[in-house]
Length: 321
Image (cartoon, rainbow, N blue to C red; front, side, top):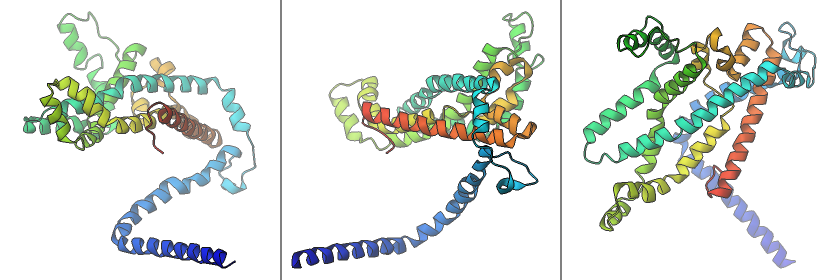
């Protein structure tokens, strides 16, 4: 009995000390907590508060009645999704572009970061190249799409140049042909993002101990061998985490890019899920159905995240959690 009471008191004291330690740490970090408050408010307002609208997917929404007053519809709109051919066509298009972007676009920032990391002595050139590569990320898709529409048009810059060089006999519709449209989408997406995406890999490479490179140099390792056996294994965790996140987002796409570059001639491949959802929700005012599509996307993205994370943990030992 005495021993049991002693253990209870020890546990209670330990719990009390833990709580005191938590509040003490919180007080010690009070200024950092103040800096977090604006970000937390934005997160709640723009990410958590809108979750209230998810119930639209299960209701026959009537703007006059509001969300809570609209009649319950159950799984009506999810059944409609299953029978909607346009939905599956948009899903197919989204997956095609996502897989191509994963295969082509994901390795490019890694390769670029490795190349930049190897410029030990040319520091000025390194900074200039990095700055130039980052700039496209800060350009809006409205500007990029306007430029591409003008540059690739019949009277733009590219077609007259190719005709003058004898490559083409007549103007080619780069944005009206499905194969060339796919190339334009992938190229513009990679061009706009690879420089900015490489920052994370470059930051990871700075944490690699220089002694490892010096030891490899003494052993006679070539530059490629140092990259393969030292740099890449050292940033494996970063690569895996970003790969998992990109796989989880495969069902999503860049709405602005596709919406601004698509046209009626390539609608069979250019209409992705985000564009389809926008047209259903905003153009046709089918808010409940559009919400159901959005909820479906979120559930699938979460499932892809779990699958990719579990697979990575089993195969590589690296994962997000």
